Length: 178
Image (cartoon, rainbow, N blue to C red; front, side, top):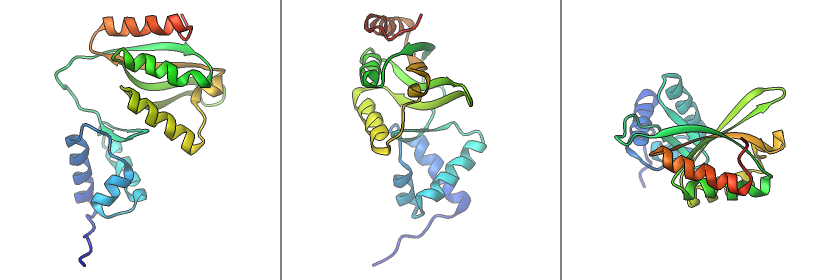
């Protein structure tokens, strides 16, 4: 039985960066650790170093993603304000993704820490389900629970009509703050 060789230092970080650039789907720290034969904690350190070099890597609930520049499809971004109870989070996110919207993040204004932003990066029901399962499994609180349900989302879509229809759906549910 041959043991897989560890990929060391800068070579490993270059390999990780290329994997992230080549994959459309998020890659978990555990997947990257297995592929490089190091611990997940080493991967966390590598990602931190890559981010410090201004590589556009974000951590999502599904894994690490390299934000591709100029994919050819122009996207429109907008920040929306919402309010709802924790039990309506799934409904809110599904309404958005069902209209073809990418929910990039959630932001709150915390009384002590100021603005807090967390990456979500969900664009379909399966990703919403994985995100919520991750919250439940880790016993984490939703950021909106810290602000009586008030929060912002950065959303993006291919055009303003898509964003307008998604906003209208949130308005109809009483989730949109205007």
